[in-house]
Amino acid sequence: MSEYNPDTEGEIISETHEEVTEPPMYKVMLINDDYTTMEFVVEILVHVFHKSAEDATQIMLNVHRAGVGLCGVYPFEVAEIKVDTVHVLAKEAGFPLKCSMEKE
Image 1 (cartoon, rainbow, N blue to C red):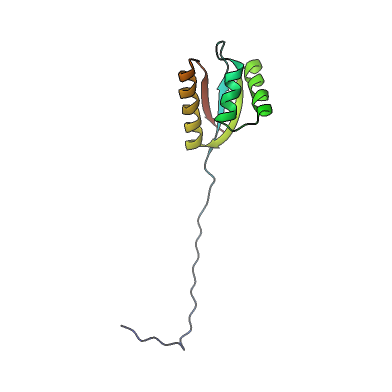
Image 2: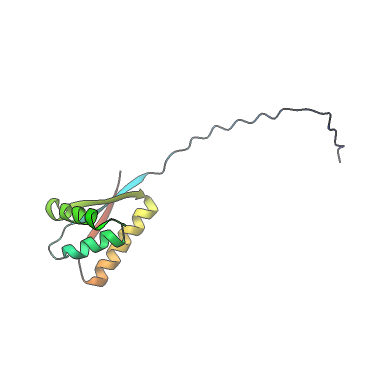
């Protein structure tokens, strides 16, 4: 075992060069159909995507008019869970609502 010598001075040099990159983000989209009610789409946007009633209504109208609407942008795992949640809730409610994700 070495002896402790308080008179010894030293310098520690440490350099770390790590590239930190942001994870890829994914857009989660709702796709229009002729059977899912507007009210259910708004409910999904409020409960799954945590949108205000006003924002949810705007997105729902965009889905209705343009055929697709952006719900949010999330990391892969979060986007995947949201898409699955929408599909499960839609199926339980008897609606064919589809949700998809695409890399931003």
